Image (cartoon, rainbow over all chains, first blue to last red; front, side, top):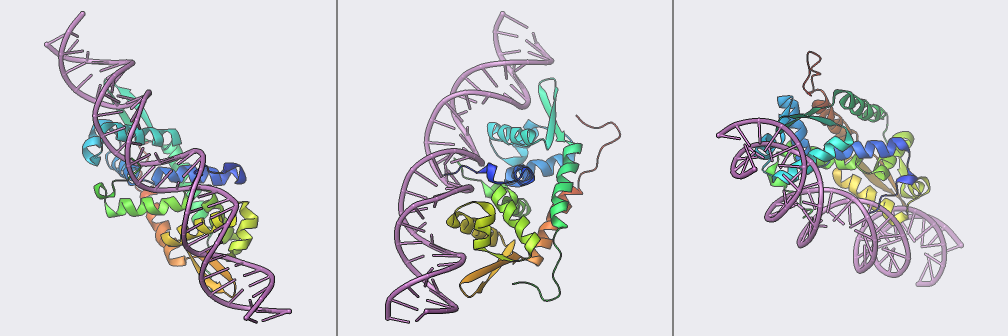
Length: 111
Length: 111
DNA sequence: TATTCTAATCGTAATATTGCAATGAAACAT
DNA sequence: ATGTTTCATTGCAATATTACGATTAGAATA
């Protein structure tokens, strides 16, 4: 069906799934990488960097913005995007919460 | 088009995107949560837990298995799934690598 | 062997995602 | 004002994902 049954799951589970989607496409990972490296950039730079058409890049940027992981400000005819520090930290905490929940059962593990 | 242009991106970017997909659906997050909590379980338990049909759960399990984040062993008529400790650690490192690449520009940030 | 139980697979329908050409909007320059 | 530059939006085609009913495969048991 392609329709996720969000109501079956907890708010945390839905939220994590949403945030994970930011990283779930290589183009968006590449955008995040680039933003981390340059600490601010514009759409045009990314079109060069990624090799995707301008509307495609713009769309990925909007998704990242909707998720909240990046933010943008208008600079004359350009737009500057950068990582949202607060959200970034929230996401980091969310993932580390999960990662740390796993206790390696070194004493006779499961399967 | 719906066709990801993987060849435009680096191996790391594609790999991270692939792994992120494990977390990019609330049902899979719920499965991971459950596996973390119980440290091993079977498909049937998950059908109860998730409220999704058995084939749907089975499909999500296979995706998680394909990604490598979980592993399963046959136990009579049942299958026991659990977290793959090695892969789990790899994924943890991958995400933390990215998370730690961000230096908060507290001194006059970007946008 | 026949039955039963559990989970995987197949087939299919519906929705989501990815990508781009064309177009639009906003700021700036001439 | 007209053109230019930069990015967003629209509209559409193609592929991917999600979900489930029906069926199949495999193991345990009667």
